[in-house]
Structure formats: structure tokens, C-alpha cells
Amino acid sequence: MTRQFLKHIIDKLRAAGFDNKLSPFVGCTNSEIESLERELQINLPGAYKEFLSVMGKSCGDFLLGYDYTYQTVFGLTRESQSLIAEDSSCDFRLAATDFVFISSQGSQFLFFDTGSGDDPPVQIFMEGLEKPKQKYDSFSHCLEQLADSQIQSAKERERV
Image (spheres, helix red, strand yellow):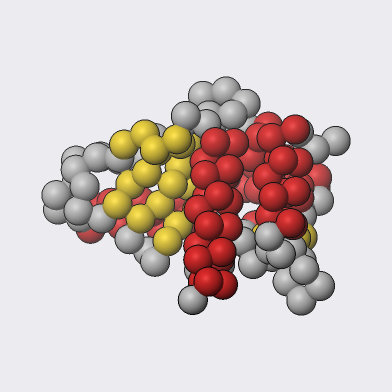
């Protein structure tokens, strides 16, 4: 059963046309989610697992331009660690329990500590920052804010 927060977000995205026949939402199987946890040796929070089960392979037209899919998250934490290591202004390292779930243009990423509950706070790291900062109170809040932002951008493009 989809959690209420995710159902609300999905309903908004569908109403705005982000889930369509040409670019539908596609989720991961339980087996794939378990494989991700096994491979990365982490326990993913419930809110993120719910997201994966509904939109882990494709969010339709939502999150275009971001690396977030099941196929890419296996390497995101490793790639993000490399970005941090190359940034001379940075005095930060990802912890073993940190999980990068989305990256944008290889210069910024969002992550959470998998040990911080079922709906953990989300941190952002951008190239040039000394350390990350908390961006969202929870994964569900992050997803809702991203959805609202992209829906608003789509509406503005329609007005042009």
C-alpha cells in the first residue's frame, strides 16, 4: 500500500501530466529493492523504498535531467565521494550510512543518513561548499517540494 504522502504527490504529478503513456511511472520490484540494499550494504528508509516501488525506474516526465533511477543509484554514492574528494574547498566525507539518491549535473547531490529513521532529513551538497547543509526536513518533504517546483515550472512554460 502506498503511503499517504506518496499518493498525494503521485496524484499531483498525474494531474499535471507527468505520468503519461509515452513516459509512465515505473516502479522497482521488492527483489530489486532488496538487491540494492544488499549490494550497498545498507537498510533503506521506508519512505524511500515506497518511492522506489512506484517510481524507481521512471518518474515519467518528473525529475528529467536528474540521476535518480534504480539503474543509476548503485553508483551515485561512489561518484559523489569522488566529487567531494576532488573539491579542495571541501572538508567533508560521506559516512558509511549516507546514501545519495539523486544527483544533478555531477556537481550537486541530495543524500540522507540511512540510520536516521523511516523518513530521514535530506542534505544537499554542491561543488564549492565546504560541507553539506540540511535542505529538507524529510525525504517525503523533499519529494513534495521537487514535485511542486517542477509542476510550477511546467505551468510557467505553458504560459509562454
